[in-house]
Amino acid sequence: MASVHHLRVYFGLTEGVEKALVADLVKPSLRGTAFGLYNLIIGIGALPASLITGRLWDHFGAALALSVGAASSLLAALLLMIVVREHRNSNGQEIQ
Image (cartoon, helix red, strand yellow):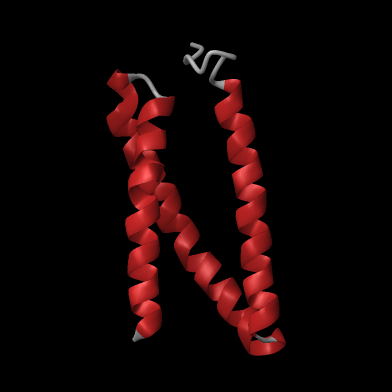
């Protein structure tokens, strides 16, 4: 039960920031499409991620499963920083 509460806190802290970033990265006329694609990708990625993590946990233990998740998150964060940097100039203004 405690893990469910941790997950709720995690989503509460991150989901709004993710959606704000999506809105910032696209033109206003494309925001609906961007949010649709964002939710599609999140939905498609959630099932395989859960299955892979479960398999790793069952076969190799929690430490490896959580380490793979942490490494994946770090890689995603680095890639996100690159993508966001390419869309902004040195003053923080959006480049179109």
